[in-house]
Image 1 (tube, rainbow, N blue to C red):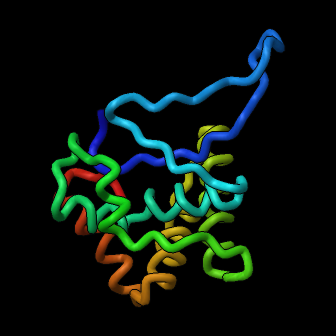
Image 2 (image 1 turned 90 degrees about the vertical axis):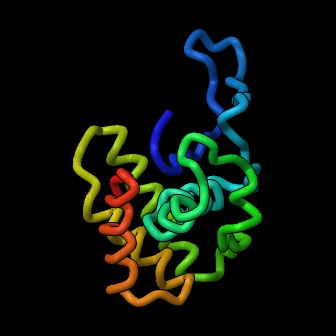
Image 3 (image 1 turned 30 degrees about the horizontal axis):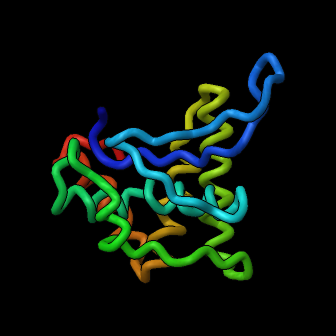
Amino acid sequence: MALGIIAAAVGTADMPAGEGRKIVIPDHKLFLVPCESEEEADFVAGMLNSSVINLLVASYAVSTGISTHILSRVPLPKFRNEDSTHRDIATSAKAIRKILASEKHTSVEVSKLNLAVGRLLGLDPATVNYTVSALKDFGIQG
């Protein structure tokens, strides 16, 4: 249980003993968004983890009751590899995932991600920076 959205890009992998592939089955508090590529999965996770989307969702949803309905309310466009902003979001999300795996600090990459999502949604940098501080009113670290 956490405040806000925590999205993760999950792929396939062999089990440690080599006995086949892991299967991801979301429970009642999780939902799955199927993606066609790793880059698309990183894009979706990046969009959902951004301060802009988290502030939007926090403004109308109870943090412990976020469900699939958010996908009909948040601006989550279909991933287009030819769009440089889509690629920027995917690249930042992937970099954050790798940094978190090594337990290093991610603030520079998180800032890049938030600014790229803001750019995609037509927000200026000052507005994006405001979303980070506004999330603190909801107890969410942006």
